[in-house]
Image (cartoon, rainbow, N blue to C red; front, side):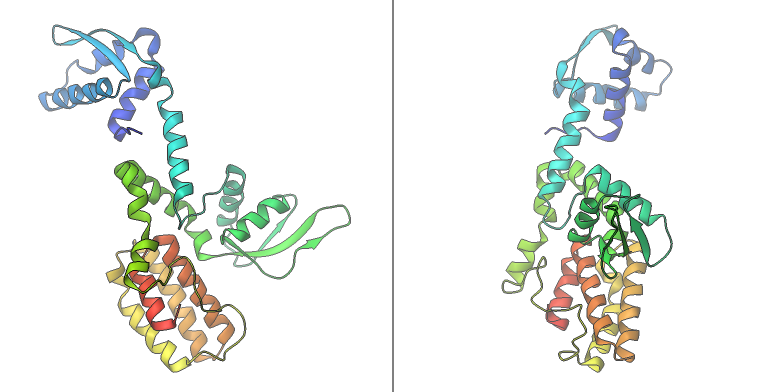
Length: 292
């Protein structure tokens, strides 16, 4: 799909909003503008024409008569469908439906670590979907009532905490890179080529239980310290760096306390963080140092 830049999209939106007297909205834009803005506006109009969205006849060097093409009326709907399709193709991002996004957003607004969720907030199907996508973690069992409802205690995973920020980042990549965006996001292929078939999307290490048999606490602490020193090289946002630092600190403290189950669970969170942020460097470090 031929995508427009934001400024040109804004002009198209204004044209659609005033299609009854088009191209009056464009004529008005030429009044009293600077030479630089004039050049920019003409360039944007030319882009709309080249994309087959409008037709313009010029007179006295400004639009005189014009027509909005049927393709223009479908542009924003087609763009939304295109972006959602691209997000669904992304191997490292699980796109949620509107209902699931609304539930996740409502949970993000709550500051408690353990969240209570019941049938008055969401359906069991939506809850299970959020858990399956790795955005929520069940803390215990789902308790069903005789009336058909349910209650469950959940916590937000790292993927859940950054879902909306990550979605916006990936949409920006799609809008800028268009059909090349998926190639950029497909770190799994790059990762496989570099590390003998190891996959960023799947770890062979069984973690998250209470089995401490495979944990060398001193060695793990050293690797976590090394990772902490390398955070800035991962090219993450300030918020992502803070989130990763908190996870590293929790894993390090759990090593000191010899709590193997927590160590493994947090390492899984860091692995999910690597997938969610598309950080091949972080994934490579986890593979080499912790055997993912």
